[in-house]
Image (tube, rainbow, N blue to C red):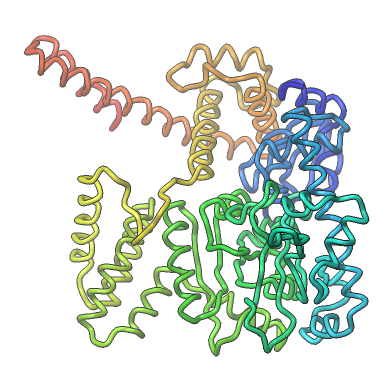
Length: 573
């Protein structure tokens, strides 16, 4: 079935009220519904839903869309993920891949699910393993919620169990549950004598495991993670993400910790926004996943060398994506799990004192530097590249000021050094990145946000110039006509979905605000739009002027100069 057909079938079977109600308590408000925003911690309801249009709009966060965009936001998935979630709810079959491949993936999912049940049962049968977990203050409720288990200290107990359940060895190997043995010998279990933490995809399906060693006197690694499989990509999966999505929305930041126990105990203490990477360093894919839910991230990692290296790696990636990255420093060789066990308030205090990653790294350098000159050189080489990678000029200048004060120099000196780094990057025709950065992609979330705000500003401004303020319901036909007459405002190419969404948004806006405030808001936006259009006309005239001068056409050049002067006078009138 084509995606377009699937989308329509889902919309035919599900109403947007059905989809949103499990997340938001909705109340009838005229012909629409209203509730408190699921995206912000507001007291006065500003979240509107139209069952007639199949649209929602949240005034507190300036976000809107249909049932698919809502699920994307709430579940932290892309469109394909939202399509799958809603198709399952609506009972719509999606045919997106070869049936044989789909059947194979389903078999892998089933094998891993059966393995999870096996580990859960073995935990209840093993007092040492259960005592190890409960001694770390993990409650029975948390064990059940996170489906924590135990892999027996045997070579083939899981393999034999799954064979009996009908799963052949090749499936176990492909699912990352068993390893191939030497010729003539049977495959053996990947996990033995380990506390087992299931790793789940955003929708809550188990796709892999992270196993923590139970015995202390062993040379085995502390953690063993599943190998990469058709279901599990270490660079994309975050432990705890399926349970942290709503917490990240609520707190408006992601808390990245180091280990599985850190995540579990953080959630148990009320920090339902905690996640951890599994078997790899933080990647751009991880940050992209988190950025769907919030643009703010706090790192709460060990303060040893490995922890500092992880912070630097995160800074390389996060700052170039426009993420507000902070670091909660945990002293004394402790980790978040230690703080929670001692007193949950200690973790709250540590997060409350979190400093921006640039300030954090400045303090680390200062503590490590042998003398002021070394500190300045290291700051120039290690800190300034991070600042250059920040997209916001205001933020760059803010941190330039902080660095200048920290190293005892003028802000002009820092600005010159930053300009030098930018020029070097331009000459190389490469984006400036922090040291050894491996990925320089920009933030799609930020770009789309700017476009959305710009579009809404433009449309409201156009409407302000032609519609009486008393009008409460704008007809779509009239809106199309307005857009057709105002091509310069970029309204002419609205899709039916955009049109319906925008009309619904404006209807709610008019119904909520007092006329005086609407008039002030629209007049300001209209002036802003007018200024933008004039500036674009000036840019076009300048381009034409340069061409005329290059062609030696003085008469045409003079006309363009006159037009530029006229436009400038309109801009300042």
